[in-house]
Image (tube, rainbow, N blue to C red; front, side, top):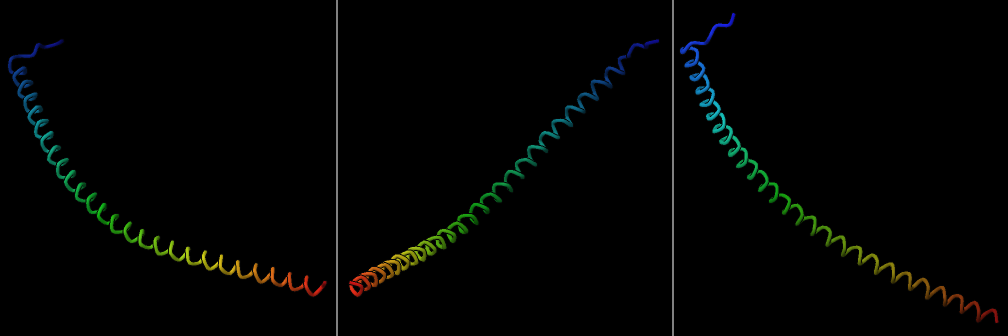
Length: 101
């Protein structure tokens, strides 16, 4: 058997729904505050990381420039010694050809 709800039950239901709506509003505000704090902390962390990366990349660029300079020197030395080797080899071959005639 189903009993009809009285006025008191309806008022209790309306009161309960108003409480839930108030709690939902409080939770939304709390969530927005937490998100704002998180956003602030995240922005600060990203800014700090960006600064560290700029410093690190600056050092890396400097090291790469030094490495490039060293490579250029080494390649120049290799070309110079290669030229000396081939000139002396051609000279030796011409000297042998002159002796063998």
